[in-house]
Length: 277
Image 1 (cartoon, one colour):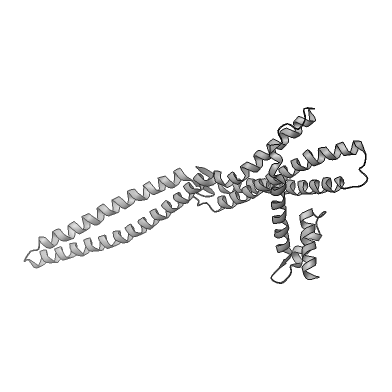
Image 2 (image 1 turned 120 degrees about the vertical axis):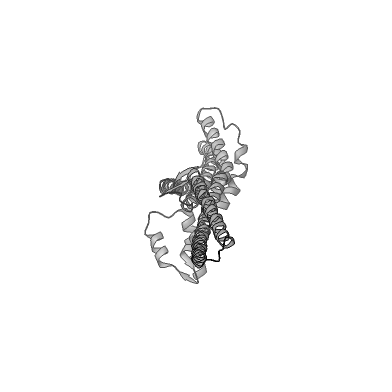
């Protein structure tokens, strides 16, 4: 696996922003259609036919799109966050092959250092065993023992550092591999919603082609799914406006200073108003 972290995360964040706009647009469309269906002005046989199509197809399809856009938005946002948290094998890149090569290189250094430590210890032991009664020879042996001991101590410190470095690379590799293995599951929660959206699109296409609605089994759960997403968005907006026992004036100004409020934003404001009232 190789991921260019910034470019990939930025692309996902851009897609998430686009999907967020589509969620807002779908929410407004659903609200407009639902309100229009209740208008007393839409009376008569012709309007009854229009109302039937809207109730049985247009509104449920819009809700299916709404739920799917929201699910994909959440998945893209989560994936971008995961990617930004990936370890870097080199500047701005997470590459499992690069991490594996670094582990192998450090392991080679570890083995070489272990060989030198063993040799230093053998040298120290050998000079002690070959001790001589001659003062110059004894002095030379002591010096060699000291050098071998110091070399072993230096290499042991280096070995400890290399082992820590290897462990760090192994931890990074594990994290990258876990992301690679689990990344598909980030989008799995959106798969059912996207499948429902595609089925809704098929029904709309069938109707526009004059072939009726086709299979509408997809519509069975869209009302509940829509209500769940809508309620979550209302609660999120409400918490951003009113928290810690008071109004967040910055968030309120941002909300009121934008374009027209979405239905969920309007509902959140109404709930905050009821709390304060």
